[in-house]
Image (cartoon, rainbow, N blue to C red; front, side, top):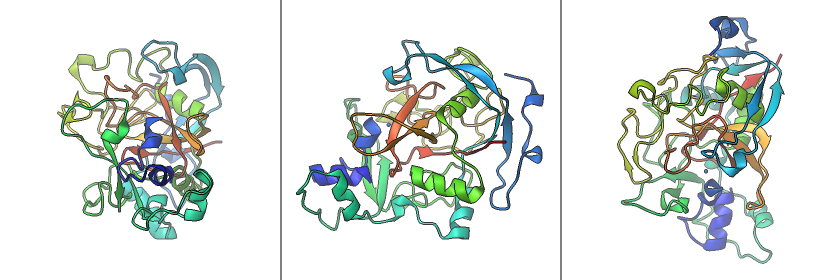
Length: 330
């Protein structure tokens, strides 16, 4: 919903929906499959056991961003985690069973928006207050990397069912991670599934897969043996995507090797919501931490497919590169 707030302030459909995004190996025996994990009748995603442990969270590496500093020791209890992000097929079962309507599928409530804009701001035109979400649209050529509105556009009709807008579908993307889901949507799914969103510490600990002090969750080499280890952006960001890894957008879950705990897509593909609040003086809207990076991450821009990478995103906002996975605690 923060996208619409920015639209009201700037009366620009392009600026809407993108401002918030600017803020955008152990032994196999330790990874028990879902046959041993608690199960529910509503969610059958495989879950893996993440053993308790202590690790260095964050980084002091110069490759890291300021919000990843300083590195510090954290201990987490053991927990179960979905082995992949929630997919379109899984989210569709939830929507069909509950009739749930996501944030992106609802028209924004002007009474709620008024609380986030300066007093006296006039109500925007009805054409602005429509369901939609932020969609990646590559520019035609090089653009400053300080303005995400150059490659993200507020798109009426975009939602998890229509990732690029009304004309698009998920008919051939049942195994792709669901996107355009807000934090509120992820919590609603978690409640239905009898699970929870992971804390940031749980997510990062699990993402590292038992490796300590490594730049990526597979080691320090971004492309070991010339092999792509995650769905990221190749070419010239954001205008020329060469898709050397085989994908120009989201990819089916489990398309790349798992980490040391057997978890897939803990780097790239889609950012993932966590339970934790993200503190930022730059945004008046409540934000939550997202982790993991996405198919839009490029070394020249953010390289956020590192375990320590983190961003904040308004909890009532979705986008074409943000999804989630869940945990269950014993």
